Length: 352
Image 1 (cartoon, helix red, strand yellow):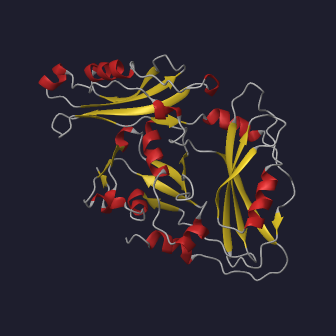
Image 2 (cartoon, one colour):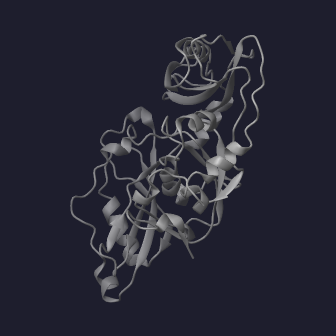
Image 3 (cartoon, one colour):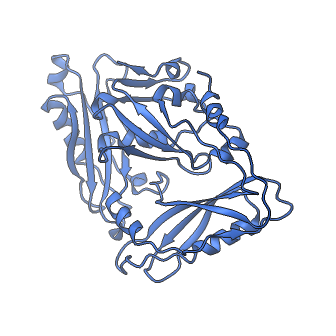
């Protein structure tokens, strides 16, 4: 499959534009919690031991390998995290080595009002590898229960938003991604256009509308809550585009920009495979939105989902505008994914 085939298949079903008169309409997509941003996450200041993690001596003597994945819960900046072993394909020697290391972690920039910061980290011990002991960067978990509860009480206007585009704006499709940060139950949110490809008048009308939203169940003691909403401006009811409903992981990765330069390793056998992921196009405007379908959230998949959130699809600017905010389901089979620069791993990423 060529890199452009997935997008081309999606655009094959593009509806013909309907010619209409009168004001254009900005379609309002669903409002979702703002994804965790690694650049602003408290994990950016994580203090870890300077000494490298040593291979357990007895395990080395016995030629044993192992994988340990842990959940970390930071409750205060000067305390070690609470540790939960999420997955272990190793004996106690490896688990104890990991526990000893993460007990030295501290999160000095964690604000008191921020609440518990939860993260996932994986440690891999392979004696015959060039680097026998490796570990991932911890990935922050979003507080989905809190986000779901607050989203349920968000109040928005009932009327449909209509905008009058500038006659100099020749685009048939434009997008505005708006971030809304609520700090009080009865005050307008702080709004910011994270991405905008429409005229200034259209963008201003959308931002003004977002300022009318309220979050009445946010208590005075609660920390701020941020949501993002996607507004799609379609001139004269321009046609819509969408991806294929479902693709394999290999098909999906063949459409990712720079996939042959990616370095990644994931063992799906440790993630309760097989499973299906809902991937919503965001980059390069903002992070892609990624979620699991048909199951409760599994923290064993957090690092893989975070990686998917940072991938950029190989699209022309025009196709990106038509597909921004569209979702595709990715089927993930059991097996492993290992990508290294200058290899052909992207062509056949899954190995049983």
